[in-house]
Length: 221
Image (tube, rainbow, N blue to C red):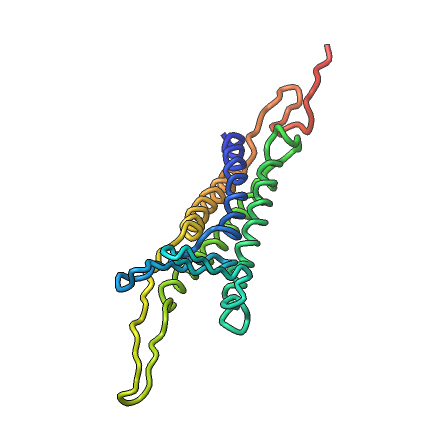
């Protein structure tokens, strides 16, 4: 059972590695849709590495691909740097977990014990899940508290000029949603790998012990 579980975990982790790369670098984390008081239906689309202002009616799109406007250190960009770092580390940790999970299979590497590699695979998976959980929760809190839109323009007296604030209804993007999903799956995989890390023992009467042989045994006639 342990070997079948490790194989399933390895295949799942392989898919998660590529999915995490997409979530970290290309997926949209939040979509801000303009309120009903405006007919343009403008949108603000944000990932961890880019920020775009979309105007569908005018077929206009303005993107800051390097995210220098709000990703720089001078404009509260430190949190974006932390989010990027944590997602990149999660990709590497998922890859390490998949590699250890592969090495824990008997069909790949015949050793006396696979418990250590299975424990390492589970630990890496739990670490990745923790990083994604912290990133997703932190981003969600920041998304609900930030002010996305235009400010009022006004002055003193009758000459004051005031404008309506364009409210953007912010909705979680696929990147944020998949971050939560991968975090849950990573915790489940890590827990299963650690719980079932003990090797399945087989007893050979000619050897007289219950340890897995390091190489296939040949019987002499």
